[in-house]
Length: 274
Image (cartoon, rainbow, N blue to C red; front, side):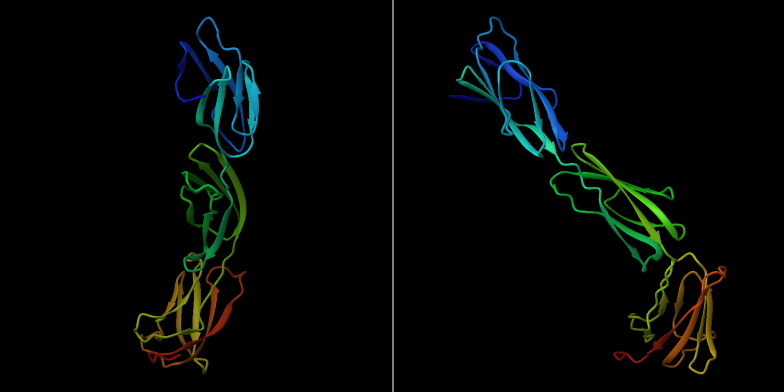
Protein backbone atom coordinates (compact mmCIF):
# COMPACT_ATOMS: atom_id res chain seq x y z
CA UNK A 1 0.00 0.00 0.00
CA UNK A 2 1.41 3.38 -0.99
CA UNK A 3 1.10 6.31 1.44
CA UNK A 4 1.44 9.68 -0.18
CA UNK A 5 1.52 12.89 1.89
CA UNK A 6 1.15 16.12 -0.03
CA UNK A 7 0.02 19.70 0.12
CA UNK A 8 -0.43 20.26 -3.60
CA UNK A 9 -2.28 18.34 -6.35
CA UNK A 10 -0.75 14.87 -6.82
CA UNK A 11 -0.46 12.79 -10.00
CA UNK A 12 -1.29 9.12 -9.56
CA UNK A 13 -0.94 6.83 -12.60
CA UNK A 14 -1.10 9.82 -14.86
CA UNK A 15 -4.12 11.24 -13.17
CA UNK A 16 -4.37 14.44 -11.16
CA UNK A 17 -6.33 13.20 -8.14
CA UNK A 18 -6.61 14.97 -4.80
CA UNK A 19 -9.06 16.45 -2.30
CA UNK A 20 -9.66 19.84 -0.76
CA UNK A 21 -11.56 21.24 2.22
CA UNK A 22 -13.61 24.39 2.02
CA UNK A 23 -12.14 25.48 5.38
CA UNK A 24 -9.37 24.05 7.52
CA UNK A 25 -9.23 26.13 10.69
CA UNK A 26 -11.93 26.94 13.24
CA UNK A 27 -12.77 27.66 16.84
CA UNK A 28 -14.46 25.19 19.24
CA UNK A 29 -16.16 23.33 16.37
CA UNK A 30 -15.80 23.32 12.63
CA UNK A 31 -18.05 22.05 9.85
CA UNK A 32 -16.01 21.07 6.80
CA UNK A 33 -16.99 20.05 3.28
CA UNK A 34 -14.39 17.86 1.53
CA UNK A 35 -14.33 17.74 -2.24
CA UNK A 36 -12.88 14.89 -4.31
CA UNK A 37 -11.11 16.22 -7.39
CA UNK A 38 -9.99 14.33 -10.46
CA UNK A 39 -9.00 16.56 -13.36
CA UNK A 40 -8.05 13.90 -15.90
CA UNK A 41 -10.08 11.98 -18.41
CA UNK A 42 -11.03 9.21 -18.55
CA UNK A 43 -11.77 8.74 -14.87
CA UNK A 44 -10.24 5.47 -13.68
CA UNK A 45 -11.09 5.96 -10.01
CA UNK A 46 -13.73 3.43 -9.13
CA UNK A 47 -13.81 3.62 -5.33
CA UNK A 48 -13.02 6.31 -2.80
CA UNK A 49 -12.96 5.73 0.96
CA UNK A 50 -12.51 8.54 3.43
CA UNK A 51 -11.03 8.72 6.93
CA UNK A 52 -11.61 12.14 8.43
CA UNK A 53 -9.39 11.65 11.47
CA UNK A 54 -12.14 12.21 14.04
CA UNK A 55 -13.56 8.71 14.04
CA UNK A 56 -15.87 9.37 11.09
CA UNK A 57 -15.50 7.78 7.66
CA UNK A 58 -17.18 8.10 4.31
CA UNK A 59 -17.30 6.65 0.82
CA UNK A 60 -17.79 7.95 -2.68
CA UNK A 61 -16.74 10.81 -4.88
CA UNK A 62 -19.47 13.16 -3.74
CA UNK A 63 -18.80 16.01 -1.35
CA UNK A 64 -18.37 14.90 2.25
CA UNK A 65 -19.66 17.08 5.08
CA UNK A 66 -18.00 16.49 8.46
CA UNK A 67 -18.35 18.14 11.86
CA UNK A 68 -15.30 18.49 14.09
CA UNK A 69 -16.56 19.43 17.55
CA UNK A 70 -13.49 18.71 19.67
CA UNK A 71 -10.39 20.84 19.60
CA UNK A 72 -7.31 19.26 18.04
CA UNK A 73 -5.35 18.59 14.87
CA UNK A 74 -6.83 16.10 12.41
CA UNK A 75 -5.18 14.24 9.56
CA UNK A 76 -7.50 13.36 6.69
CA UNK A 77 -6.99 10.41 4.32
CA UNK A 78 -8.55 9.34 1.04
CA UNK A 79 -8.13 5.76 -0.20
CA UNK A 80 -8.39 5.39 -3.97
CA UNK A 81 -9.28 2.06 -5.60
CA UNK A 82 -8.42 0.29 -2.32
CA UNK A 83 -4.68 0.60 -2.99
CA UNK A 84 -3.58 4.23 -2.89
CA UNK A 85 -3.78 6.44 0.18
CA UNK A 86 -3.53 10.19 0.03
CA UNK A 87 -3.18 11.86 3.43
CA UNK A 88 -3.01 15.45 4.52
CA UNK A 89 -1.31 15.52 7.90
CA UNK A 90 -2.85 17.84 10.52
CA UNK A 91 -5.05 19.24 7.78
CA UNK A 92 -7.95 20.28 9.99
CA UNK A 93 -7.19 22.45 13.02
CA UNK A 94 -9.80 23.16 15.68
CA UNK A 95 -8.72 25.54 18.43
CA UNK A 96 -10.52 26.35 21.66
CA UNK A 97 -11.86 29.82 22.17
CA UNK A 98 -9.74 31.70 24.71
CA UNK A 99 -10.93 32.14 28.27
CA UNK A 100 -11.82 35.84 28.76
CA UNK A 101 -12.27 35.51 32.52
CA UNK A 102 -10.19 37.82 34.66
CA UNK A 103 -9.40 38.36 38.29
CA UNK A 104 -8.86 41.67 40.00
CA UNK A 105 -7.86 43.11 43.33
CA UNK A 106 -7.45 46.57 44.78
CA UNK A 107 -4.02 48.02 45.36
CA UNK A 108 -3.88 50.21 48.44
CA UNK A 109 -0.18 50.69 47.85
CA UNK A 110 -1.03 52.51 44.63
CA UNK A 111 -4.26 54.09 45.86
CA UNK A 112 -7.71 52.77 46.65
CA UNK A 113 -9.01 53.87 43.25
CA UNK A 114 -6.40 51.66 41.59
CA UNK A 115 -7.27 48.09 40.58
CA UNK A 116 -4.93 45.35 39.35
CA UNK A 117 -6.54 43.10 36.71
CA UNK A 118 -5.24 39.95 35.04
CA UNK A 119 -6.59 37.52 32.46
CA UNK A 120 -6.60 33.94 33.76
CA UNK A 121 -4.25 31.29 32.37
CA UNK A 122 -5.26 29.85 29.02
CA UNK A 123 -5.78 26.11 28.51
CA UNK A 124 -3.51 26.24 25.45
CA UNK A 125 -0.27 28.08 26.13
CA UNK A 126 1.56 27.21 22.92
CA UNK A 127 -0.06 29.93 20.81
CA UNK A 128 -0.09 33.69 21.12
CA UNK A 129 -2.90 35.86 22.46
CA UNK A 130 -3.86 39.51 22.33
CA UNK A 131 -5.97 41.43 24.82
CA UNK A 132 -8.23 44.44 24.73
CA UNK A 133 -9.42 45.90 28.02
CA UNK A 134 -12.25 48.44 27.89
CA UNK A 135 -13.04 50.49 30.98
CA UNK A 136 -16.27 52.36 31.51
CA UNK A 137 -14.33 55.57 32.09
CA UNK A 138 -13.18 55.43 28.44
CA UNK A 139 -9.68 54.06 28.94
CA UNK A 140 -8.32 50.95 27.20
CA UNK A 141 -5.32 48.65 27.59
CA UNK A 142 -3.78 45.83 25.55
CA UNK A 143 -1.69 43.71 27.92
CA UNK A 144 -2.61 40.56 29.81
CA UNK A 145 -2.23 42.29 33.18
CA UNK A 146 -3.13 45.91 33.70
CA UNK A 147 -3.16 48.43 36.53
CA UNK A 148 -6.00 50.88 36.17
CA UNK A 149 -6.90 53.92 38.25
CA UNK A 150 -10.54 54.97 38.18
CA UNK A 151 -11.33 58.69 38.45
CA UNK A 152 -13.64 58.27 41.45
CA UNK A 153 -15.33 55.71 43.63
CA UNK A 154 -18.41 53.94 42.34
CA UNK A 155 -19.47 50.86 40.37
CA UNK A 156 -17.66 50.45 37.06
CA UNK A 157 -17.99 47.97 34.18
CA UNK A 158 -14.81 46.44 32.80
CA UNK A 159 -14.73 44.41 29.59
CA UNK A 160 -12.02 42.12 28.25
CA UNK A 161 -11.75 40.66 24.76
CA UNK A 162 -9.14 37.96 24.21
CA UNK A 163 -8.09 36.86 20.72
CA UNK A 164 -5.89 33.85 20.05
CA UNK A 165 -3.32 33.65 17.30
CA UNK A 166 -5.60 31.47 15.10
CA UNK A 167 -8.28 34.17 15.38
CA UNK A 168 -10.57 32.73 18.06
CA UNK A 169 -12.17 35.46 20.18
CA UNK A 170 -14.12 35.58 23.42
CA UNK A 171 -15.26 38.43 25.67
CA UNK A 172 -16.40 38.96 29.24
CA UNK A 173 -17.62 41.88 31.36
CA UNK A 174 -17.40 42.28 35.12
CA UNK A 175 -18.63 44.95 37.50
CA UNK A 176 -16.07 46.37 39.90
CA UNK A 177 -16.92 48.41 42.95
CA UNK A 178 -14.32 51.05 43.73
CA UNK A 179 -14.36 52.43 47.25
CA UNK A 180 -12.38 55.16 48.91
CA UNK A 181 -10.47 53.26 51.59
CA UNK A 182 -7.88 54.48 54.07
CA UNK A 183 -5.27 52.17 55.52
CA UNK A 184 -2.49 52.93 57.98
CA UNK A 185 0.04 51.11 60.18
CA UNK A 186 -0.13 51.15 63.97
CA UNK A 187 3.65 51.29 64.39
CA UNK A 188 6.47 53.15 62.69
CA UNK A 189 10.16 53.62 63.46
CA UNK A 190 11.71 56.92 62.30
CA UNK A 191 15.28 55.84 63.11
CA UNK A 192 16.77 56.52 59.64
CA UNK A 193 17.37 52.90 58.71
CA UNK A 194 15.12 53.28 55.64
CA UNK A 195 12.74 50.67 57.02
CA UNK A 196 9.29 51.83 58.13
CA UNK A 197 10.68 55.33 58.80
CA UNK A 198 7.40 57.13 58.06
CA UNK A 199 3.78 56.90 59.09
CA UNK A 200 2.05 56.59 55.71
CA UNK A 201 -1.71 56.63 55.23
CA UNK A 202 -2.65 54.80 52.05
CA UNK A 203 -5.54 56.47 50.26
CA UNK A 204 -6.85 56.99 46.76
CA UNK A 205 -4.18 59.60 46.08
CA UNK A 206 -6.82 62.04 44.80
CA UNK A 207 -8.94 63.21 47.72
CA UNK A 208 -7.34 65.87 49.88
CA UNK A 209 -7.34 64.82 53.53
CA UNK A 210 -6.74 66.74 56.70
CA UNK A 211 -4.79 64.92 59.41
CA UNK A 212 -4.30 66.03 63.01
CA UNK A 213 -1.88 64.25 65.35
CA UNK A 214 -2.01 64.64 69.12
CA UNK A 215 0.26 63.69 71.98
CA UNK A 216 -0.85 61.55 74.89
CA UNK A 217 -1.76 64.74 76.78
CA UNK A 218 -4.00 65.94 73.96
CA UNK A 219 -1.66 68.59 72.49
CA UNK A 220 -1.73 68.87 68.72
CA UNK A 221 1.82 68.17 67.52
CA UNK A 222 1.32 67.96 63.77
CA UNK A 223 -1.20 68.77 61.07
CA UNK A 224 -1.25 68.52 57.29
CA UNK A 225 -3.60 68.74 54.36
CA UNK A 226 -2.72 66.64 51.33
CA UNK A 227 -3.93 63.79 49.10
CA UNK A 228 -0.79 61.95 50.27
CA UNK A 229 -0.36 61.66 54.03
CA UNK A 230 3.18 61.00 55.28
CA UNK A 231 4.42 61.85 58.78
CA UNK A 232 8.08 61.50 59.72
CA UNK A 233 7.62 61.71 63.48
CA UNK A 234 8.43 65.41 63.81
CA UNK A 235 6.29 68.24 65.11
CA UNK A 236 5.14 71.23 63.11
CA UNK A 237 8.48 72.96 63.80
CA UNK A 238 10.52 70.04 62.49
CA UNK A 239 11.68 68.76 65.87
CA UNK A 240 11.80 65.03 66.53
CA UNK A 241 9.06 63.84 68.84
CA UNK A 242 9.80 61.31 71.58
CA UNK A 243 8.74 57.67 71.36
CA UNK A 244 5.15 57.35 72.49
CA UNK A 245 1.63 56.52 71.42
CA UNK A 246 0.00 59.27 69.37
CA UNK A 247 -3.65 59.81 68.51
CA UNK A 248 -4.67 61.05 65.07
CA UNK A 249 -7.79 62.08 63.18
CA UNK A 250 -8.28 62.04 59.41
CA UNK A 251 -11.12 63.52 57.39
CA UNK A 252 -11.67 64.67 53.82
CA UNK A 253 -11.04 68.38 53.49
CA UNK A 254 -13.94 69.17 51.14
CA UNK A 255 -16.39 66.31 51.67
CA UNK A 256 -18.51 66.97 54.73
CA UNK A 257 -20.58 63.88 54.06
CA UNK A 258 -17.80 61.50 54.99
CA UNK A 259 -17.16 60.73 58.64
CA UNK A 260 -13.93 61.52 60.40
CA UNK A 261 -11.66 58.54 61.06
CA UNK A 262 -9.22 58.19 63.92
CA UNK A 263 -6.69 55.84 65.42
CA UNK A 264 -3.48 55.40 67.41
CA UNK A 265 0.07 54.97 66.18
CA UNK A 266 3.07 53.90 68.22
CA UNK A 267 6.30 55.78 67.45
CA UNK A 268 9.56 53.91 68.16
CA UNK A 269 13.04 55.25 67.55
CA UNK A 270 15.53 52.72 68.89
CA UNK A 271 16.88 50.52 66.12
CA UNK A 272 16.08 46.84 66.26
CA UNK A 273 13.33 47.16 68.87
CA UNK A 274 9.59 47.39 68.56
